[in-house]
Image 1 (cartoon, helix red, strand yellow):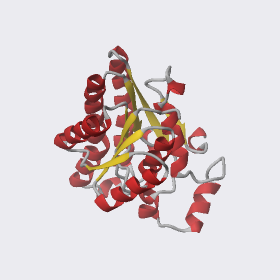
Image 2 (cartoon, rainbow, N blue to C red):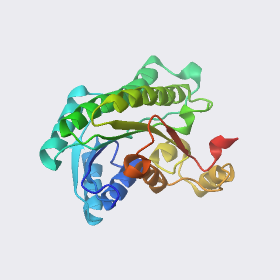
Image 3 (cartoon, rainbow, N blue to C red):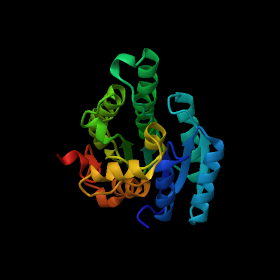
Image 4 (tube, rainbow, N blue to C red):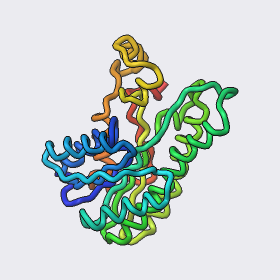
Length: 253
């Protein structure tokens, strides 16, 4: 029970990494505020967390809206007693050549991937100060925030911005009393709808990704959930401003 008596706000918790994190963090003792835009999928996350023995509240949220963030934090305060952990997981991904990327594509990518995380850190700091217990913020970036990928300039740029933002925020969080740690998770190829929605859902594709990965396996959402738990719990109490790459070795070459 590494997260016993802690309250975690997880964005993008209606599927994939966010949902897996909600379930696994609840199994480690955390109470969960799961957010997203799909209410039916959010209800399923609540069901899965409850089935796993945890407590979960779903809050509909657009991470680019300041007012939505305020409502999420108020919900956590009123219904669960505070905020100890924020997992900024919500994001968007598309593959498109640079020449075909429109201003609207760029703007939407920036607002979700960068502004959404910035608001999460900002409101996380405020809520944790009100709670008075300190805490941990985990910003989910990507391996593509560290390395380039063809036809994904907007995604690489916005995920790279999260890395720099995290380091600066970690320095501010260290000055807070109680302290707030801020770290970045860089997933590699994780078999979620973000991948299958762009490239297709087939065994042949999964095998191709696995063959191109040193550990010869495609990552699963639960692998990322384990890493998030580490960055959120006391086992990483001396870790802040760090970038944890969990990619099966894809970025090692």
